[in-house]
Image (cartoon, rainbow, N blue to C red; front, side, top):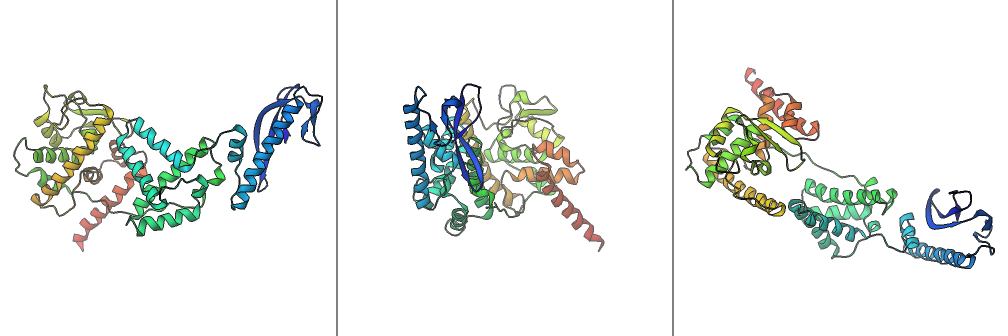
Length: 386
């Protein structure tokens, strides 16, 4: 046990835990005057008013700690300072399973429906692997992650990037728990285990393909026509479908659309090009609250998220029908509109920083992927010279 100076008359008591030649100090939340402390016995001297009670507390606490250390030693586990701290404070740190449940419930309370659905699916998959066993943080070590990765690939048929997404959430939970002081930094298996991704091909539409799609003769006011218009508008502005569906007439001044993105909360202003303006003119009405006719009334946060997901799924179904009608031999989905916008903008000479800003990318590296695509197209164009 150690004493650390607090005031000249009273000093706090700490237990020093040394592992691998590194020491951690755990406060006992007790103080004692140094003249009543017996250094050799590591106990309070009899002259102290509460000596009997204090020494009983010290003996009981040390016995509890020794019991935990011995139990872990038998199991081949090490005892973390945080675990011993929980013994002293009379409360247990949450298991990994409980900590994950807490995070999932938080997403549900905050009505973050898409995030809730994603992380709940990740943990549900983990429960299938473990048989819903309660996992401690220390159960998820380097060996566990390697075996789980193999199970995801072989039994679930997950791609490398899907595996990366699953384990990235595990890493987030570990990092959050470390920041909250629930586990030690050294207990993080991701110090050894490295997340891996594989490069994917980002499909996009050429300008000719976008024009072919826009030129389709479709029945006005039909759902498939509205989806086509929404997609083409996105190809020329780069706006995510979740933001497009929520654009109100107040967001458009006749030249620009200005809105706060749902994903990053950034305020974005985009000048609408003429081809996209002609689409807006079909739908922009003083009697309509929204620019596009997909959401009819105000919804609460959770209802809106569910509505956006539902509309996105239906839009993607219509795009599968539209692609062959326009002679497009690609698997068309709505997010391809952003890939198409980025590639088209860079080919037309828009600076990469501006494209990155318009797309709302947090890092220029994300946008640089499209630079490679645009450069490859230019290389192919130069092949005509032989």
